[in-house]
Length: 304
Image (cartoon, rainbow, N blue to C red; front, side, top):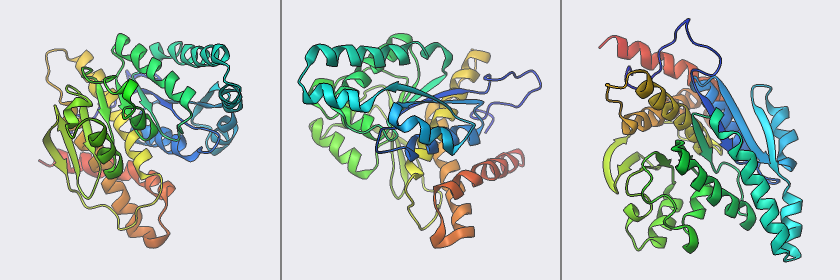
């Protein structure tokens, strides 16, 4: 745990334990970015920013005062521009969205992209430009859900090929879709980044090859939102990996180990929630168990 968990210290200030951005949340989907943002906080990040559609912002704000919610586009304007086939207006709207995220990047340790994003073509175009900007700044990325769908489209297939500071989180269906789009070779999606292939066991790949797996028992109920919880947890663990590297430049910190730890946290939290609620378990129950699960992991680690 010492290689993954950022130590608590009286010298810390607000934001020093992680500032996580969540880019997602559309007119239709408001729960996913909430779960990702809250899991980042429950894991130990200090600040969680949600960048979403204006239509989703009020709902997400009402879920929790802990989240800082910023609308970065208006869904009905995007829809109208597409319907009218107004290419000039489309370009203006995309650039406005990209600029709003660009202006926030310097505040972030990690940007998590995808939870509740939807598949509006203009939003996906904006996401591709945001990814390019993040790469130019070497900003760590977690790519989840519909942001993964972007990587199956012909014009965006090579977007993350050579970027090493990225974690992709496909489930079984998303992984199969990525394979089909890249001639059956998952290393063509990202040759240098990490893929966390979610399933009965979570397999962590780097360069297309498995480097570790997490088969910790979870719950027997697959509630909606668990993938979003993992995405947020990965965001925090990835941020801590970056912070620890900066604090101790000569030390070796393993991003695959951080990924394994995030998977373990999510699975143990789910197991605890399931033991209490059984069939009634939902994602908020899992959120409440992240803290206790992490305390137990730290205590167990200190005994060895």
